[in-house]
Amino acid sequence: MSQPSSPASQPRRLRRARVRRAQRVRGLVASALSATALLLVALTGVGGTYAMWVDGAAVTGTTVQSGTAALSLSGIDSALVSNMLPGESVRQTMTVTNTGQAALAVTATGAAVAGFELRIAAGGCSGTFTTLATGAHPSIATKLAGSQFTTVCLEVRALSGTAAPAPGAAADYTVTFDGTQVR
Image 1 (spheres, rainbow, N blue to C red):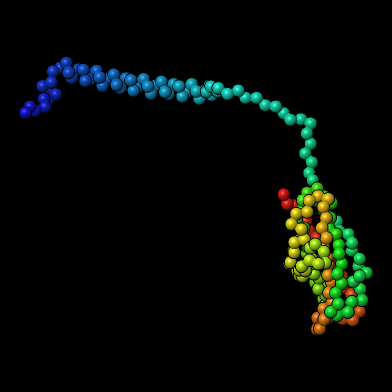
Image 2: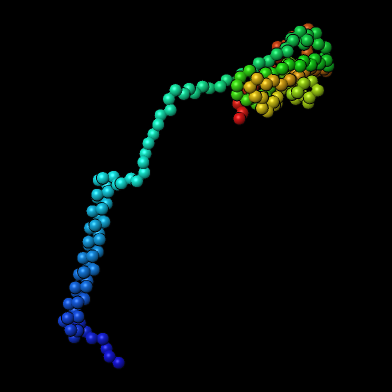
């Protein structure tokens, strides 16, 4: 079994070949790094090359216009709600119309006044009534497009018993219809 020879025992020619090979590898690595650095500097300074065409065109003569959102109410007769006795109720049919262009979800709000109860039904007086209490917002229409209308029924009821209004009492009430834009 032979033992590896020491560097001193290797022929001079082999040692020189290894040194030259190592120098060549270092030279190639240095050349590659130099070429890469030079390419990066050149591209950074010039901004690179682009192989895509770019063009643009302006749109002129156009107008953007917003739509409108509006509700109107018809069919109100305040004379119907007078001289009421405890326990009596009066129903009144009204029409809520979207007079704007945007579709609206319509809700109603109202506050009860002393001795009276306000209730509302979507779809007319044969619908299901909801009491208009502070903070309640019953839905009247989930989507009412522009120029469309819906019928609602408002019921005003004079309470009876200890909550009854005093004789000859008058009370103002307000029912507000709100429209919120829907898509």
